[in-house]
Length: 227
Image (cartoon, rainbow, N blue to C red; front, side, top):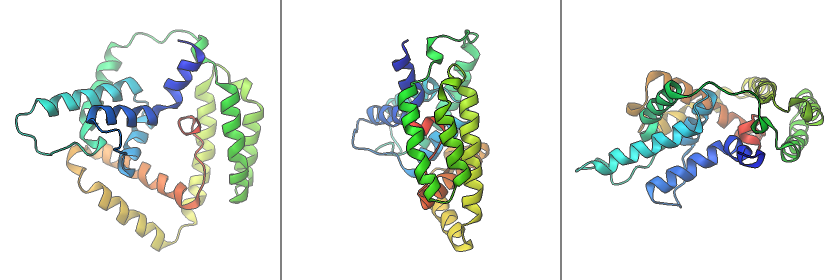
């Protein structure tokens, strides 16, 4: 696998999931809901491989189409695939060979990533996050130093993101927090029966985090959001 192909597999986690779900559903016009995106983010945060998510989607639709009587006319949420994704991730983990040493796949798509980071500096600075903006600018300048060590780069970026999130959430009013909770409850209501308590807890956090960033119009910094 060359560096370009690797970059696609790593950075397009969300896009790959949405497009695969659309193909499995047979509708290219279908868009994932906020809850679906939050669920995909929980899988990303848990380290669920993209391969497992795609396999879980396929397995879910195979079972759906095999039913003689379908409870729903269409599958309208990624949450329908949650249990199958969990199973596929476990199967993949149990059968995965030991991770090889660093190869060309560990290289960074440096130019595109540096540009993406630099584009986030001014929005952060304009929103009052001077320290975060300076940290992101420094990482962009030193990007070559992270070649072959994506885990360290991701840790640094998500640490900055978490700091921004904590400050942003503290600035929300009680009414704004209540509004987010009401939206979360409304979005989750049709899907609670398909998700475990642990999945629901992670999903709630991901959804509320996403809404906080959107309310402040702030850029995300995790590698999965950059390209």
